[in-house]
Amino acid sequence: MEGAISSRPNTRVAVVTGGNKGIGFEVCRQLASDGEVTVVLTARDETRGTEAVEKLRALGLTDDDVVFHQLDITDESSIASLGDFLKTRFGKLDILVNNAAIAGLRIQKCYYPQDVDTNEEKFAGMDTKQRLEWMIKTVREPIDAAKKAVETNYYGTKHVTQALLPLLLQSSSSSQGKIVCVSSDYGLLKLIGDEEVRRDLDDIDNLTEERVDEVLHKFLSDFEAGALEGRGWPAGFSASKVTLVATNAFARIMARRHPTLALRVNCADPGYVKTDMTMGSGVLTPEEGACSVVGVALLPDGGPTGKYFTKGREASFV
Image 1 (tube, helix red, strand yellow):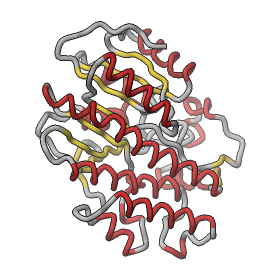
Image 2 (image 1 turned 135 degrees about the vertical axis):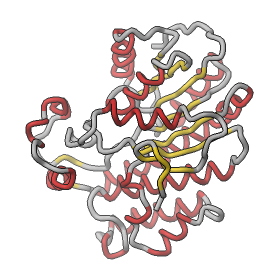
Image 3 (image 1 turned 120 degrees about the vertical axis):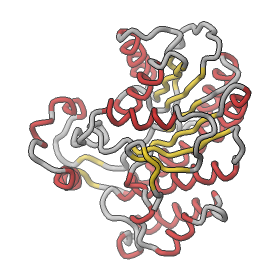
Image 4 (image 1 turned 120 degrees about the horizontal axis):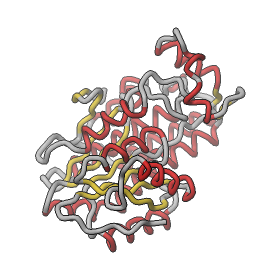
């Protein structure tokens, strides 16, 4: 499962969650191609993760560049196992890219993920709005999928980050620890109609994890009651949007909590990318989307923290 890694001086160590396909795979490839980063590609499924690493090695990367380790971000023991591996093998972690996420949807029409690369004709002539409208018609959003999205996208990301934080802080002797949460314009606060919730999540000086928990609990309660729109929650891809908003808030809390030069925490929007999650409807390739994420992961030491980047530029969380 884990290839032997030789010790290279001054090499940074990066973990990418959900690295076996799509944007995550491309983030792994681009980071590992840097020449100064050893990437730990993680995936929930061991077979798929191993195959992804083999694919990268077929592209010319070596055991020094990339290695696989299993990770289910919703499983406490799986997270602990990754932490033990990193501590034993490297003694530190320099970059954490929180990419693993699910859409919180169920597909209601005949569609197969493997069609992503051959589905371009379906979207020929459609603009971004039309592609999103097609997706809305193609999926449904049951409460069990929404609960799973909250568990995975927010709490999974949070628990991985907290578990690996001590190793990230240890990287500060040679470089700053970097955390990048893959985000989206679906995570902007303007999508939250409840003024009090929107205000609280933007009040970063006073925002707490407990308040984020309360917001997510209220969201799921309103979802189950069929009262989303009436209580200010976004319509369409609701769980995806709310969990992105919550994850952005958590990233800002982490940045505030660790303001020293030891750690930089930012969010990066890869754009509307052709992936399984978008059912191939995106307008960017995974390579293009990953480039935006990698750019934030490789920002120079002393750079910004607690920021949101889109198209490589700082933007507002609102």
